[in-house]
Figure 1 (cartoon, rainbow, N blue to C red):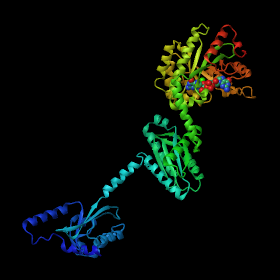
Figure 2: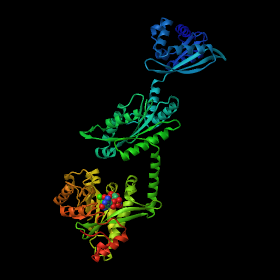
Figure 3: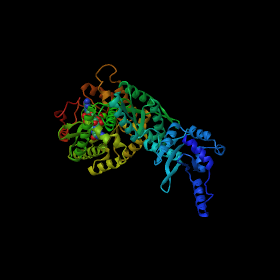
Figure 4: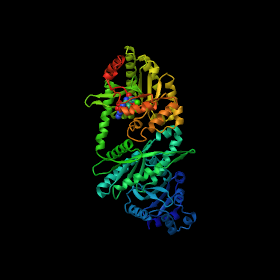
Length: 595
Ligand code: C2E
Ligand code: CA
Ligand code: CA
């Protein structure tokens, strides 16, 4: 109603009434009119009765009111022009009404057009000598500005690579879901996803392929979800999913399985096919738990999955916290222990196949923990490897072992050619400084390079076989000998084995222990021994526990053996006693009889 009148007035009074004004006034008014027409805002001025006293060109443009409508003074048509463009015409009219009822009031609101435009509307009273004579409306097109704002907001809350929610948005969603949980009570779950072996792909295929892979994985994750679920990339190769309003907790494991299967499908990049797995941790929301706690729980469950069932899922249990704390404590202890000389080295003799002589020793790490007593490698080597402490640990074992072997050689124990074998973990092998470190250990101990054997597991060599070959050649150039440890447990093909510059095959215990069990028991050990022979490698059997195993291996032509049947690992003092006994031809006094 009001607007209809306003537009009618507008049609009558278009232009400034300046008939009686003097020149100055005329100039001021024309300046004002020009300014109004030049401004980017649409402006409409109405009197107290709602009749239009003025408007500018931009006003007509913004509303798209055609000149013929304005010139024919068709109020009805003009209003319908205005209203049919708005998403919410009712709100528009009621706001106008409200303001005419309150002449003193100012207002600011937002109008949404059906064509997607967003217009800010301002309104304030027009006063002459303190008296309210009407009202000024102004309309500003802020569509572009709002779009930019939205884009910035999107960027702030989304991962630019995959377009998924980012950490901040995800946390916020989880927070709100937890708030709703107390009202609705339907289970909610957070899935924490971490790709397995992504780093390898990034390193070998390059970052562009790595990015493509992440984008594709993000799409696959999204494809496993309902529209109401939220998927996020938390950084690197870590993703998370929020599942709300589940009917049962079991549904979350179904989604986890679906994601695992979907991500396991091969991914194609530049003609190559790669396969990545994903490990998933699941944690359920509970009243009173914070978003941060829930995410931490899911993360911890993922971590447990990764350690125990890579490529599978784990549901969070509260004892995971205890374990994680224990590990953390152990890590702190190990770091401190390495600085305090708590690391010890045990030596296990490697004997000639018939057990008649000691050819060398394998250095094995032991940790004398201040409260837990003597710890075996299985309780700290993996931790040292994961945390990087293996470098310091490995350096200490290497230096100790080289010095010790040299000392035994010097003491006139008749073992001038005694060799010492030291284990190198994957992380040590691939480290830039490994060659320098081995060289330094040899120089500082004075041990002849030929008396040092470095043992690297087959699996470690296969992790990145190209780099491994390079590293092994560099080490080999120092004059040391190289052994493939735990041979037979990895998946190296013969062609690879030929390319690794190794001297020794250590036959894993898995092939030795069946000997004596029954038919076909020694066929694998036999195959490995003949393989070693064909490739002119020295064969060392590990884990020989019985006389029968020792005899069979000797008969197969295995060169050396190591195992509890001969000697268990022992401290340096006992080994020294053994070497002294050996000199007097009486090694049976300190150990089992030779065969
Ligand atoms: P490994 O290199 O295969 O070492 C041989 C392991 O088999 C040793 O266990 C040894 O005590 C055990 N063993 C020897 N003979 C027998 C036998 O007749 N029967 C049985 N059941 N076991 C036997 P240990 O000392 O517990 O070491 C376990 C693993 O820890 C080693 O396996 C090696 O992979 C790792 N490790 C030990 N010391 C070091 C080290 O200084 N650096 C690195 N990187 N790894 C180490
Ligand atoms: Ca070994
Ligand atoms: Ca081994």
